[in-house]
Image 1 (cartoon, rainbow, N blue to C red):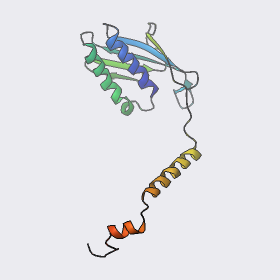
Image 2 (cartoon, rainbow, N blue to C red; image 1 turned 45 degrees about the vertical axis):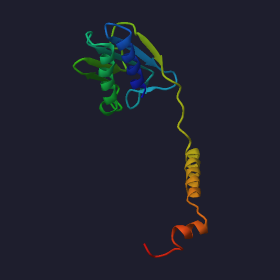
Image 3 (cartoon, rainbow, N blue to C red; image 1 turned 135 degrees about the horizontal axis):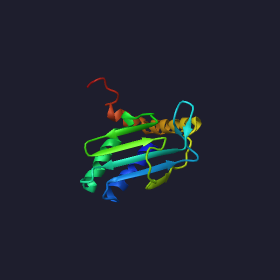
Amino acid sequence: ALVVRLVGALSDWAAFNTTARYAVGVMSSDQVGFPATDKAVVHRIMGLVQCTPDQAPGACRRCLQALIDEMPAVFNATVGGRFLAVWCYLRFEVHEFYDSSPMLNLVAPPWSPPPSPASADQTAYQEDDDHDASLLFDLPTLRLATDNFSERE
């Protein structure tokens, strides 16, 4: 999710802030690490996006968005990746792979823990209570709706 945020921000920059139609940047995190290997966690990830310079801003952004939309399926749990289309390109890595200074320096949002199992159980229990309450009918209503519990269709 954080990689998608990085390349999304870079895509906006490349499409709408430069006629060169490219952007490089970094996302850093002091709290949350990006898994790099089975044992290592890094706190920076670099990204690059690029469109052919003849692309209009909207066309560039759409091309990059099409690549971004495919990222979860293609790069699930990888430490880097490259995606090349005819008119656009994106890359992300946990190591530096470009010489220029980043155009964007993003900070990952603070990490928030998932809800505790107790609160999740309480929520499910509360939802069940609400659901059951909506199924209660009084006896006269049931008799009317079922023609006094008739077996006839």
